[in-house]
Length: 359
Picture 1: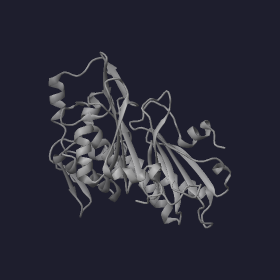
Picture 2: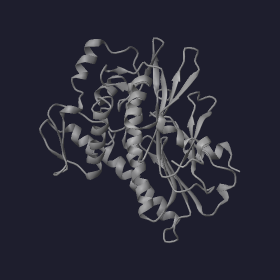
Picture 3: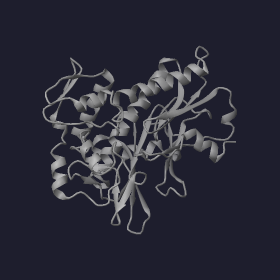
Picture 4: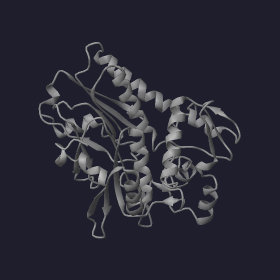
């Protein structure tokens, strides 16, 4: 039997100096799986949070230690390239570069920036990786400061002049990034999802068919769970004290990411300051969307889209989700403090209640 403590340990529920920007997802496993000798579980720290992986029936050609080291290396490679907290990362090097300088980057960093541009364009600018100066201004960046009062309008307007994806230039042929004006990029809203994908792809390259990989609540699955059916993933309730799950998903070969405002925020004069910054207003979001979960083929897009829809809010966000054919589940706060659930047309097949209806 897997206890609640064991489950928390498997999922790497940790707190630290950097609060998790996304909701954690709980893996729902049935009793008896932990005793299966063909099930291996691994975890480690990364990106201000933790990574966790469950591997089922790997081929005999790869050892348990090789699985662990390979997973850790694939995740650390992404962190080393894209961290804003590391001076030697490609992201930090680009941020220090002068406008007009062509900065060579890896195929990995370029792929994440290109995906970010795609989501930026399709979301009407809601997802903007140049929003970093505003994140710093509101106390959610590398400085980790807590504000006593909100920045004034003039300061916000001044910082907003440093924001805008349109100033970035991507040269796919030469694999370089440059900027027309002073810009800094922050990939924290999509890099975790990409790292999950890299770990999953590494497992598949080793012949592993059945797995679950998670970083900070962003999850990708492959094949079957230890029970022999689809992986059960629970979407956590915003009521953290209770730790409830409000929906259980059944996934195979899909990824899910969740963005919300209840894990990383502070209050100024009784007003909640969310870590999610709207690049259009230059301010933390103020709508009633508590969390949004996105199911996608890969975790990078699920991660980026979850943030974009979180910025947009329930009405515009769901409109775009339907237009783009995204599988989306939202929890919206009502005036009485309860939560209303909204879901897109594409979301229904993944609910546990619909498990026998293969998507």
